[in-house]
Length: 173
Image (cartoon, rainbow, N blue to C red):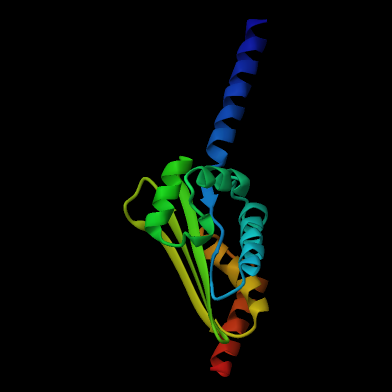
């Protein structure tokens, strides 16, 4: 009987540790600059889906992020810099935060993302990609940013899409 209780206690402890360590990444909404906020929110959701479903990282639900930030009267949609990521990460008590922005100037787009590790004073990883083209190209480029920031091997198809967007961008400029 003692063995069964000890085993149950051990399993509960393992489950609690897995849950506690599984959600140490917060992803804020992509900050829109000269693009509609609704488009940025759609891309933000897609980015989170890629990180959680395709890459397999456990992230804090955006509702929790928004709830915590609302209490501090911070709009996470405008947080795209390292200092802001650190402040938000501190409020949320997470190990890592991803902040990003999309800027549009005519047919030119600039996608920028930063992965900030709270316990380190250095910026963990940064991704910037500038291109000329259609707004539809933002979807694969947001996916590309997720793989780049988290240092994960990206699928061949995504690499080919990124290469095509880059080459098309050069031709359009």
